[in-house]
Amino acid sequence: MNKWVLLQHKIDKPDCDDNHYDFLVENGKDCLTWKIFEIPQINGPSIEIIKQVNHRLIWLYREKYTLSNERGQVQRKDYGIYYIVGGFLDEDDFSLD
Image (tube, rainbow, N blue to C red; front, side, top):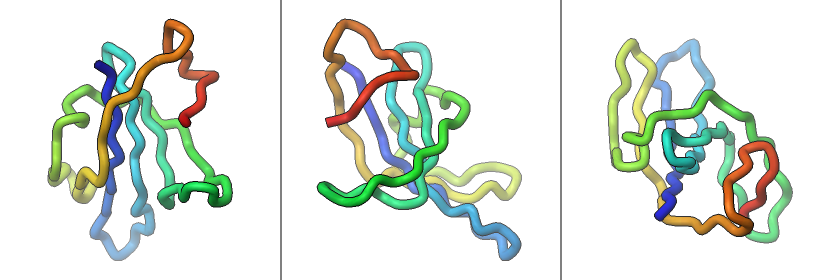
């Protein structure tokens, strides 16, 4: 069963304006990860996504976590499972429905 998770990442530093969401998709050994600045809406406009370094699988299970070195807090906002259509997950070419 393949998991996905949406994490809210808040940074509590006055000189930092990088509060965002991380969208993680399990791909077996780790999680494909993208940064987004707003949650997409059904039938809404397209949003920008920014590919990030793959994250560890542990992030699929954490509900709330304080990061070290003043990197802020992470809180799970939503999660679920997904099914691969077509046999494998191609991180460069896939869509979510």
